[in-house]
Image (cartoon, rainbow, N blue to C red):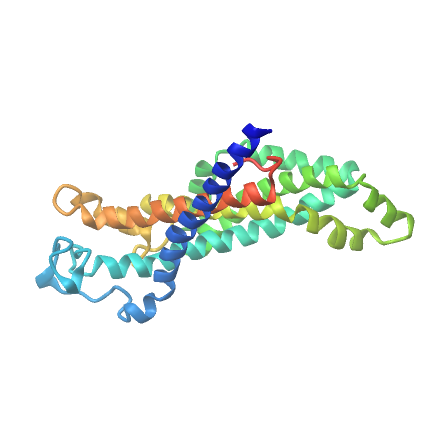
Length: 285
């Protein structure tokens, strides 16, 4: 008993530290991105060829230096974050909507519907995302909308499997059986009794998936299959600066740091949410 009491404050402190650091990293970068139209009205496109490849911390006008066209790196990191965050959040919202509906139907109704849906889920989970994404984007062409659609089409299965497992554990609980006994319709049971009880694991997975999708968007853009190169994005900035790593490291390093701190912050928030909402460990990374 004494040992448990000794561990509890330390564990609580780590939970609070995860929350603070997560909000500091992800929230701070998100705030800069949201304020970028006010802070950088030129959208990071202002060019000054006389100041091209200016090193960081040598000019107050270009605190993080400039790129090969004389554009401010800080402005482009802030403006480019809008694309990366938009892709991350919109793709997750689409995937969670489809996956949750499929998981609710499969887990609650069982039978042939569950068998067909979950076999399709198993097949799709066996396919490597990067290969599927490269194939579809090579056919459909690059673009923000195409990247979001590919992520939704390949990631809804994770939510379907998670929700289905949670529903299977709930459908035979006493409060569900009581609702059926008094004549409550299946639709009402699903959306008023079952869905609220599976939201915890869904929110946790969403938080972690947003971070993962930011990395995926940056990777696809780096490969030339994501966002249009003319639109500022973190992945595009990494691709633009790879030929200058030895002479102008800051062109790639600062967007890379933005990706790293955003993903780290979201992962920390996801870990904190998992400890708070799912202490039994039902949701895995």
